[in-house]
Length: 260
Image (tube, rainbow, N blue to C red; front, side, top):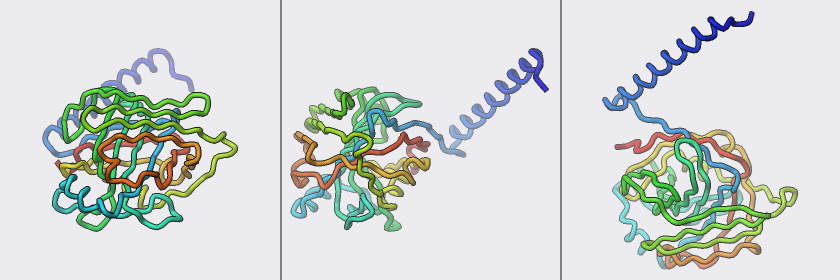
């Protein structure tokens, strides 16, 4: 049975009223600290989200730990990124395009820590965006100079930071039929559950099957050119262990500043 125009108008009005009240209820509960906010956003696949994974030099581990000055309960930890490798202490450069609540290009330098329960988690050591944003370290994050593009099979990432130094990447991506699918390690995926910042604040994240069950694709190092002039380069081996990209668009829901 089809709705008449009058019945459709009535239901549309009821929908707007009822769901607006639910949002007002959620806003009040968040204000009263009875609930946590939930932010929806998408990590897009064009250009693909890339992860360039470096091994921390063994002779610089202690210096890196001193620089990061981790809060109590967190400690640097090795982790497997791919399922068929041994754990290693990593620093990762991740560049991606996000849409949803915010839109634009972001880049994050991250390492891994074990929490008080011994579970590996992400730790963001530096983040930059081409649009203004918020984070628990700076609160208001100014827009930075960066790009992350894919044209004619060539991926280009450029991050300019007066404080932390510049990073440039060019990678010739294989054609879809030639891409090598890899299996991400379960602990690398689960590390996304809680993403810490250097001051100990963490974001709790939820993600769909595109991250949990999809393969990642290898970016051949032979076609990868990197110029790393960041402060992090002095703690890293000169060549990345590997570079990978997500094979699909991933939908996230994040509860920011979860432990505040």
